[in-house]
Amino acid sequence: MKSTDLSEGTLREVIIFVMGGYGPETVKVFNSAKIVLNIHVEDYLPYKVNMRTFEATECGSFLLTDYAHGMEKLFRVNEELAVYVNENELVKLAKYYLNEDERKVVGKRSQERA
Image (tube, rainbow, N blue to C red; front, top):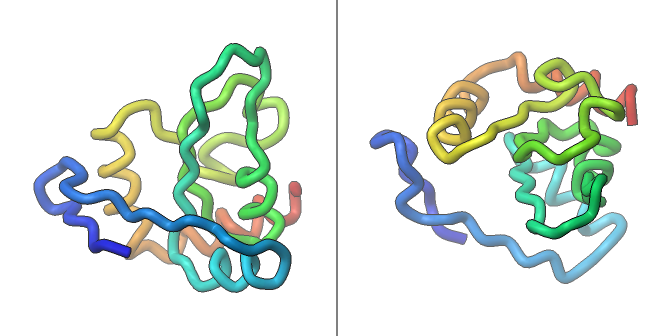
């Protein structure tokens, strides 16, 4: 993993985590993270909320995700998970929630919904 410099308002390096396992291993990773970042793959499906959305929320982890069509039908956006629409918003939300206890409340709400 590489560190991320959020001080300049842009992501200088990307944190890359390749998940090689499932089940308990994934739960440990999500539960140890302050923020689980979710980036959807671009495609032509009308509804594209991916599995990470559910895996992270079921663990009670705080999820910071890009917007996916249909997400608002499954979760209360910005109450049960945080959504960004561009890189600047991603950086702003990540900086805010890294040091904010509110992320624990949001994570708990998302777990109750999932």
